[in-house]
Length: 544
Image (cartoon, rainbow, N blue to C red; front, side):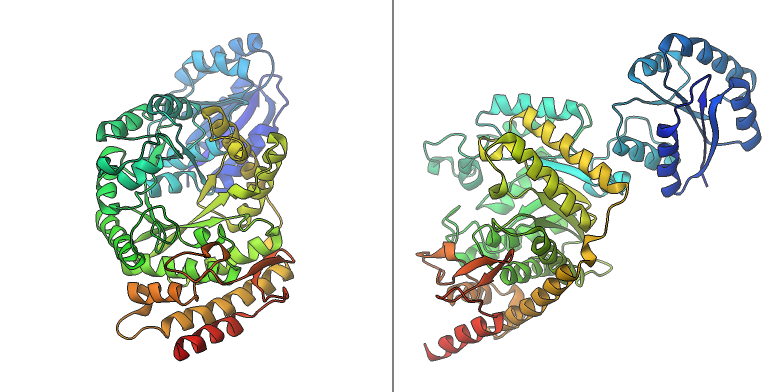
């Protein structure tokens, strides 16, 4: 077991930071010993010789002028006692750490700007003797290095390439984002490989990327700071071609593809629904073969269109099920909070826990999921920036109840404008502070009786909907059959109020937020159970 010994030296009696550091180390499996406050240098050296630690932590939080003599004495005794092979680290105020860095004693220096995340990253890599500045360039390595601190993801894409490149540089140098998701404009997503079909709009919804070189520029801009992983929104057609492009240019951290969307269903492309489902499945399979993690951003697309919670839970399961059957090994499961608008924290948490229970029931030796929480929901942000920051913090706190691997932070500015670099940085700092507080210990909101009751209700109702979809199948696996999924949309098993007038969907369902949850309702506003809703649809199908 790796040993850490620490002390506050000289006349310094401020030990709260040191105690906190040792507490984190102990939780991560280190054997720790605290010598105490106001420790004489010779006493520290004697303790090091006696206990033989691997890492020695030195703390001093008083004036920088006084620490100079202390560190000169320490350096002399380290050399004379042959203790140079120990890993010496330092913690102190900003002014004092400047002296510590210049002393040449310490491999790592922590200041008041250092966070719990920095401490965890150091402690997780030290036993394997990685170099000081080590930033893993694969999703799983990054997660494992930072756990239990989740990695932070944020999207970014300004309306010009040059502005986006400058922004990526600034965000990378800030070191607050682990995964930067490039947001391309709609022309890029739909027509990158068919430039002759592009509209006159440029920068609509994100950065205009018009050549492979543009992607290389974005990647090059990110090679600084904490070297964030890059990923990019998938195309809304030609998905496999886009995956190939992202793989060779920005080393896509993971791909995101829907199951039914990016089709005539949402008009983000003109792909017929069944054709879109087939191509989306092919994209999952292609990325799986390359060993690239896959996210199927399906469930929240329905919730953003006011789908009832039962449907959102069922689609979360179907999305993961399809990824598994396309050969995906590492599945990124996104849980978007605050959708639909008006969802209460109690009911939001219950819905997410229902999704988790169904998705993680699919886990095997060859299929596991990563929990990615998205905070806050786009529609939940007030226009006033101060209120929006409050909404962000509250959403992060609730989402941490899921013990996520990834926190997808959405800029508090989204209600007024697409995030600028400074918005991204501020958003991630707020997010990190809330996470740090939560990791110190928080009540288990998952045990609230209201949460448990709603979760069980949603799981039971999701099974009813899934069984109804399965009943449409004739040959093979109905859950992966594009014809079955298309029919489920066409007859209204999968439906939202926002699909009214859609050529491939019913759009006949009515939903409402009641006591913080989204239910199907009749004309009088009364709740319709999923069994009632589904049986009526299937009966009409038989008589048609």
